[in-house]
Image 1 (cartoon, rainbow, N blue to C red):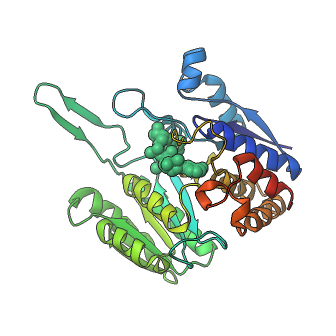
Image 2: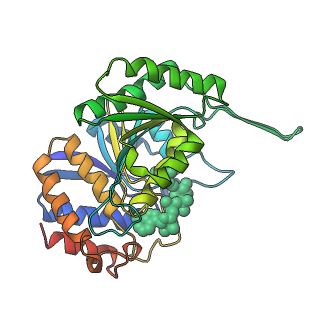
Length: 332
Ligand code: NAI
Ligand code: MG
């Protein structure tokens, strides 16, 4: 039995984690969950946003499945998600976006994996506000080592999975300092992988290219904010936020979570799509070498997604979160 930390999170988090737990249990996956939470919920009960018990559990298990955690807009605490990524140096945020048979979209051939730098850039937390002058500074700090780690992770992935091309996305024309560092490191590392095509695009053009001809992209690597935005864009190309998975990976630990947030507009209604979290959980099973279990669950999931009637509302079906989970379980 492999012990994994489970963070249910906020909003739809508890609903979709219940669905994933039910599917894992029905598939007899040899994983035991150690449940710990974070965010406003734990602050209200024990006065800690990131409880010591969660940190201890993560340090012990080194692998976690995480639901979304709400972050206040404007004043209030700093994103728990960003804090966890920085605290444990989970520098790669890996977000695949692939067309799924049965999910109606404008494209039938999207297959990309986005590598988002996960600890630096505009999310560094270097923010100043001068009350008197009403001037705000948000510093997008990049380090050479940080760029090297994410870009190497992207090329290593491309190498391992026989991907033809890695595209770096930047704004080096305007961001002379950060852009030049990121692109410079990209060109250096690309030389070590001569069999992989290295391409780069300026972020604004990239957005246009992605919505017009997404099939031209394979592995994409970019800085934190661009990656955050592009991954939601990519979600829109393949069926929406309900279906795209993600992983925060460092050298010592990995936390798997969907791309989406806590979806307050549908929370508590039992209608959220658990596919994104389930796909993140499948990535987790590959990470801990439970490949047979991963493939078995994936096959049942794909068969369910192929039939719109069996899916949740975001995919045009009528199933609740748990009915959808039961439809998957029936096919295991
Ligand atoms: P969101 O991703 O929660 O929702 C955007 C839209 O997608 C909503 O209409 C929502 O109903 C829909 N959606 C998202 N997940 C879905 C699912 N599984 N099934 C069906 N529909 C789904 O983004 P929003 O509303 O901007 O953010 C809400 C909160 O989540 C904020 O506090 C934000 O900071 C937080 N957040 C947390 C993340 C994390 O924990 N990693 C990531 C993104 C946002
Ligand atoms: Mg996001």
